[in-house]
Image (cartoon, rainbow, N blue to C red; front, side):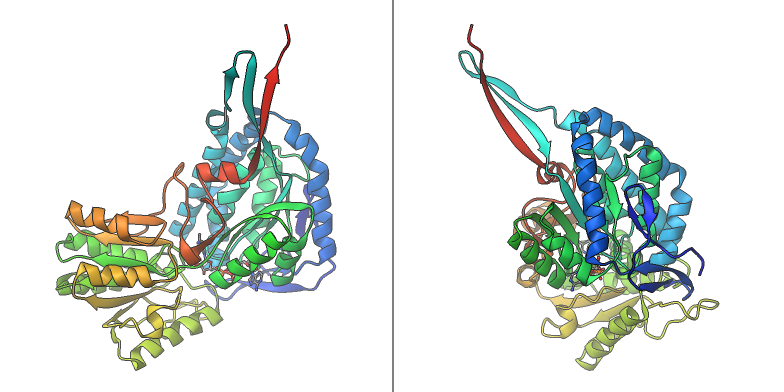
Length: 476
Ligand code: NAD
């Protein structure tokens, strides 16, 4: 094993679990990196107890005092950028460049938490002569955060800095497929001065997620993952009267109009579909080609060919992910799609045990094919030909998901109409991965998000706090 076996991280230190661990294998080359515990309810109880004990003192600090720690933590992320990026690359399979970008985004998210004193200064008003109303913001208590494999560092930071800086204490459950980053985040938070027990990591899979949903002392949770699990977590968590925000899967549509800028559009479409090996909830999985855009399709294929597995295209997470992606491609071909670029059976010299899928472009996909609706989660672009914008919008609107939708055009009127009619929470106009930068909140619609509000930005302030309204009258 390259790294020591992982423990849970409870009350400021690693704590062994009594459970049997599972192996953590690198998708880059099949190397065994570590092992991760599949925690028990007793492990969760230890973490919740630590978080509950830490809460009153942590919550009693001023917001400024808590934010001081996140200034230090932000600098530690910067100082340890290369090491964090390497861990992310090894456990997730994405390239070093993509991994560094992920850490930089985590820094941006931490900076938003550092600016909280400027964002939540409160309100006060004399509502009638001698009567004052004011609002105080209070944390919720012990909260939880459950994350997927595809962004081991960025997605946890959607939640951790804001929830903690606002005065909550936390039990974090990372994906068991990428657990190493979680422990490193915990160590850096401790090094930054976070008091013991404020942040705890409990590893595991389905059973520990269910135990988190059911635990009476956990007041709120965010979940990010696939739609079926997001729905189950939302239902189970809210039925035990928690505040829950559960982000689900996606199938993003990208409409290309004939007037779109050739070079920009082609490069952007290929990067959106294949970046992070297509394992992004914001990836453009389906291109809706409006009218005659053959010149753009040709160029998308050329741009995609420039993505070389093991060089500027990372691995997919596991052997089972690779075989599921390849099965989707084969089914689409059997159902009549034209394979313009085929990434099946890809192997990287020197990394034969790695799990790579090459860039794949499928043309003449039709809405009834299974690939048109399934979340493939690999570097695969499906192109559906449509006669006009109306037909393309109908297809976009018919998707049960609603994370992102993108239009490529040079016509402002079309862009405006598209933004108004698209059934998605994040819209791109000539931008292939329209992730809002902070402080704009990240959040989809429909089956891509269960619960109210965005998971980042100003929405997260409301999610992680409750307000207290104080009416005062002092008698002369
Ligand atoms: P996943 O749903 O399999 O797992 C997510 C988390 O849930 C993990 O921590 C896992 O241990 C746990 N889990 C898995 N199965 C469970 C079950 N049956 N019951 C309870 N918990 C369970 O997701 P993944 O494969 O790790 O991540 C990829 C998915 O995440 C994709 O669908 C992607 O679109 C989605 N995603 C969505 C967003 C968003 O913001 N909407 C962001 C990133 C990823």
